[in-house]
Image (cartoon, rainbow, N blue to C red; front, side, top):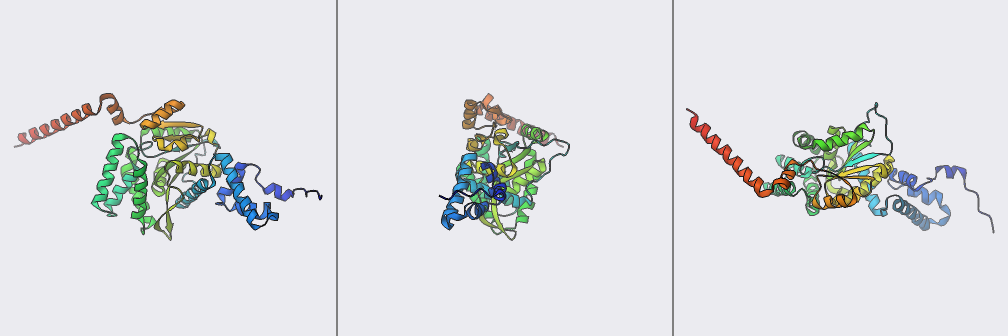
Length: 360
């Protein structure tokens, strides 16, 4: 029996030595590292076995590091690369040079009802309505969803998915520059004023500790990135609409960043940025984000819906509530608040009438 040849030192120096190192290279190349595995690491196997070996190596690494299947992780990779393409750079802002960098640690923030009050997608829809992207009926539907969201504090998966489909359809054929301009107007005039100061302080705490801060949201990535840049955050991952030659096609790149999609994208981002998820923190209001909250070392429920509050209490997670209206409902009840609202409105009408009667 012929003894096995010793490994080539040059090859050994280029092969990733851990599953995470393998995924870092695989993710950066959008999967093209499989060619390396197939054509260099295992050339004697033959074309089809080599391809299967490459797939198996990638799948095993994804399972070992993140507990995900390869298809889910690949969708996350596509999302991250799509977000980077939309931003034109891996990150939106540079770290403060006076603050030591805490490599490996990051914070991930949901947007709707976590960072801002209400729905960013609805804000985008209302802005699009003002630009005549769609009909008054569409506006009425979005207004109802916003009202329901404000009253219940809970997002509906069907509403999010339906909103995503609508948004992709409405921007089909529109220029990217047009949406970016609209997004800047929406963020500056309607979203910045809705940011919860408590959540913003938490994000700043991470930045002051030298950690990266990322928004991770179902809202279109261009809008999320404008908001992140305005707040001085590192970057933003969002739902990525496909674009060709500066025009939206109406198709999706990667996952919609809702529920498991957020975990897939954060896994891919972690491989690229070298995050140790056990040292990372995630913030959300919704039980839909349990896949993301469960994959980090510290999970924080911000303005949680009922199910997330229960999960957070059972798991010993931190809970923060910055919703003055929701706290008032819990304290006084809806009937009492409704009666107070009617009384206040009546007082305003009465005072207005008195002012009119006093006029000469």
